[in-house]
Image 1 (tube, rainbow, N blue to C red):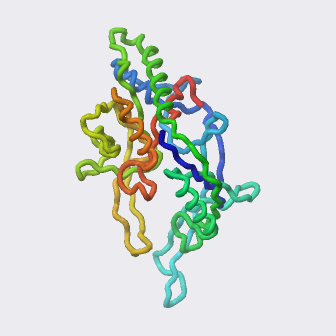
Image 2: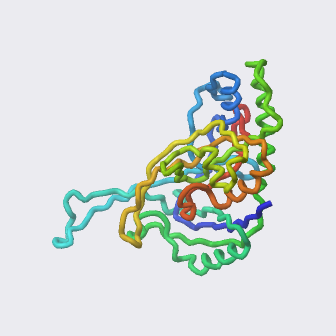
Image 3: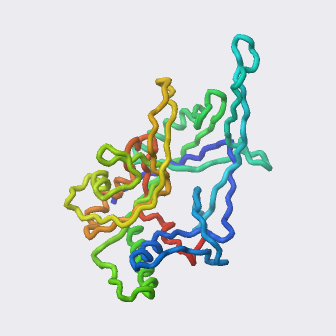
Length: 322
């Protein structure tokens, strides 16, 4: 079993954080859509509480004491104007606004603490990273317009802790839920064959934006061939592809060291999910654990391509909305 070390990083930021829950709840449709499509039944879910329309939802969430919470932040616009250096007055046609996160909580004015983590492969690297952060805790800036005084944060690193990824356990729970739901959907098509006991299903979900390339071309879908290449497995290893839910965007940036714009990249948005199955699960367990550590696609060292195998949120079905 691959072990990882979480380095917990509370960030003292001047940002507002509000925890709230949707009135009618949020649920995942991956398992139900898979069952409906394979039974030849159109799937169009409605709200489990009032029968109303269900809309896609995007955002971030956290789990505390098995309860799901949605995060939101308050922002404001900072309006700025360019200065004519010769006349020392406002320059014509150079008026712009910067969207910034608020410095503190709106009511009490206290700074906000964000808690995150970094997954590293060994304890020595985790300790070195903790020491590096502690020595420079007041020197970090994040986001854009740092030269204008924005983005200053204070980072405090906690002692690294040993964690297990438990990918095999998550895969087993996902398959148990999938097969149970398959039996529920059987009322719409009794003639449909059962799921093979030899086939094991698993999902690959993007936790961050990813830059994916297949045969020198940009793509938003992780194909079986790509996943085998990421996992460094031979093509003879069995892997079937079932469905993909993804969207795309374009991303660029500014290289401060070179003073140049970065290349425009086609990115697959975080939240994308891909469903695979295999009858050789033992061959996939260790490679999947390593992929969860290092990510997929290009520029993983910059945070792109972070994945999670069989996220627990897929188990939240329509009548179990949180």
